[in-house]
Length: 295
Image (tube, rainbow, N blue to C red; front, side, top):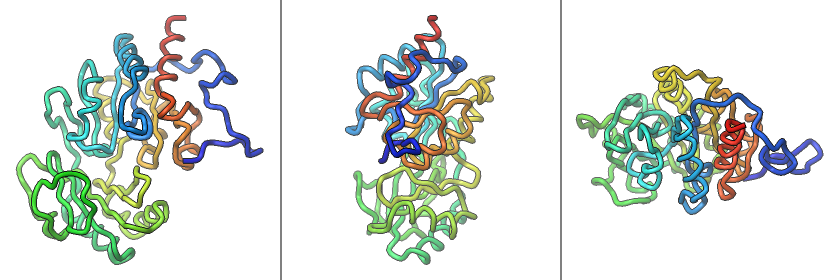
């Protein structure tokens, strides 16, 4: 991804670079909300020792940490141990609140199967060659031509059949739409135009992959709900992200940071910058927050 620039075309310094203020001057937060892939995690999907230390220190200082991600629960093993206290995370772009320590679904905000099917038909008509998969709480099913990225949970089938497979405790969290060649941002624009009435459509991958959640469901709506339950206001939240699926959360939070490798739309939408994910940008800001608290 491109980095933010000044009007002159020169790179805009990240907030935590030496040219920026050395201390954290914003209000001290009560909650940190961070995306994972491309934001908190390094490019190899690992959590650096520096980031582990920053998260641990934040929770020790009484600042709650929420992982807010598009990932499903089965992809959370690499970070589950780093939520030392409550162990809860917001998954599937806001469609689920999950207790990672207990392996339990706390709350779900599902996509209706009929709305998903309408969105699939609209997308396939507008962009032939689009293939689909569905993400439920513990299962993932795909069409035969949808790229295989992990062991299949069951037989592959057309989207109509995939959406008809229902089981207790397995609400539909999101539908995935994949195209092999279209420009990712163009695919998102078309998806919003032809299927936006049927759910929330966004993207978080480098490829042409759309993520479709229930109408009104986003990282922001579920984070706001979790914060309200804890008596935390938006002004007391610092959020970090890198891709379009983070935009709603970054706009809602009182303080928002884009990592240097963020999508251009995210860089434009956020007031603050930090270093890239591979340079531990989130950890750097947390360290500054904690240093400012200590005075």
